[in-house]
Image (cartoon, rainbow, N blue to C red; front, side, top):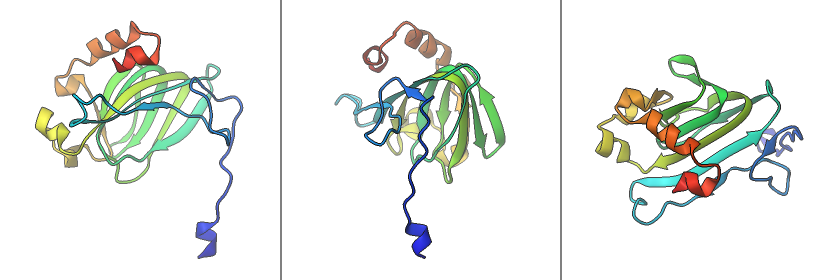
Length: 166
C-alpha cells in the first residue's frame, strides 16, 4: 500500500509558458476568480487559461471536474476523449458536463480558454439540460440554443483577463 501514497515530482517543461506565471514548484497556473455577488448563486468560478507555446507543440492533460463548465476556446486546437469518443475543436464555445473519470484533453499550439463553472442545479434550471445526459461529454453552445459565436466575438474584442471577466 505504501507505493500508492508515495509522492512524485510533477514534470516541469520549460517550453510551457503560462501567461499567468508558475507556482513555486514551476507548475503553470491559470487565472481564477470568484464570481461577483450578483451571479454567485449560479456561477462557481471564472477562469482564464493561456499558454504561449511553439506552433505544433502538444500539451496532454485532463479534466476531472464535478460541475458543468462553459469553455470559450479562443486559440488552440483541442481534442477531448469523451464518452462518445475523441472530439476535436478549434475556436468554439462549449459546455462540458461533469466528469465521472478523468477526461483526457490535449491542445496543440498556443492556447487561450476563458470559462466558468456552474453551481449544482444551475444547468437544469436555466437550460433544462439533464446532467446525466452530459456526463463525460461536451456540446457546443449553439447546439443548446445559446449565442456561442456572439460570446466568442465579444471575448475576441478584449485582450486582458479583466475584460474577459466583465
